[in-house]
Image 1 (cartoon, rainbow, N blue to C red):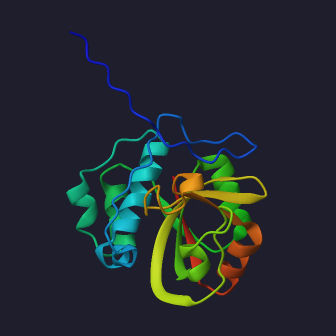
Image 2 (cartoon, one colour):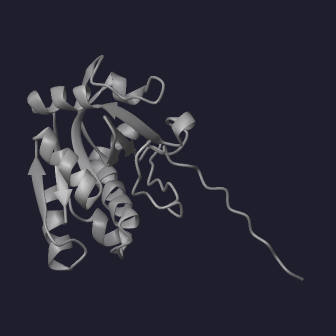
Length: 187
């Protein structure tokens, strides 16, 4: 008897320009019941790093290793020491961020949360509405006059885009200018 297993993959938002997200990447979620608990448990950063490594076709450390670090900087230093990434830097310069996405691949967006991020409008997340006193990390994987990203809240969070999102350049620029956001660049 032959058993056939069919796995339905949730598609990514495909920007008009070439996207670096391979078709084989499955949207994974280390999602907890209360989305706001992710910051205290470091789950959003774990998701972002694991997604970055998936997209880049790199090996990944054990999940237990990833979850034990409470500081992004210490986690990233350990990823360098163990050879998962070569280097990392933090940037608030929009042109540096765009150039990095276009030449080196995905980046990790570290941001203060807003109501406009919790409830996307037509796939877009914004810095509008109530400002939350929480931080969140997401992946920006492509740019074509707007940013395309993935969130750790699972595919039901933004079902039209399978848990992905779009962010305008203007929104990110405002957040960078206010120092509400910054971006981790890996090589």
